[in-house]
Length: 138
Image 1: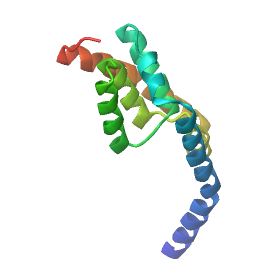
Image 2 (image 1 turned 30 degrees about the vertical axis):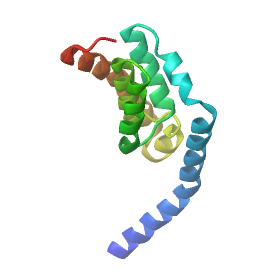
Image 3 (image 1 turned 45 degrees about the horizontal axis):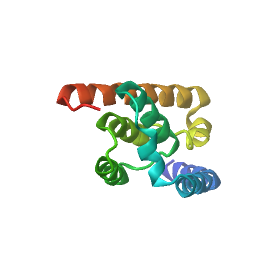
């Protein structure tokens, strides 16, 4: 029983490799074609609009939590508002527009869309709540 399960798991992972490789290639393209100065110019609006922009950008450029802290620090140093950075970072680690096809294939299309939509909306809410709670302005 265990050997059969292991063989099935290995086959499943091998069949997923082309999709995973495609996701990594798309990540590389996004990071190569969007210059860092774009982020600073994009976040010059109200708190609500900044959180929406941050969530959109974070959703598209999804990444891992370790790199998000470095990016957040750099954005703070460049004068980007905390609400935009918070929305960006929450979406960065929880929403995956680029990974949506893989997620839909393995977990179901409806689940993937609902999860990503809810995470996107919550990233905006978390950003606004964080800034309101700690009392730091845009």
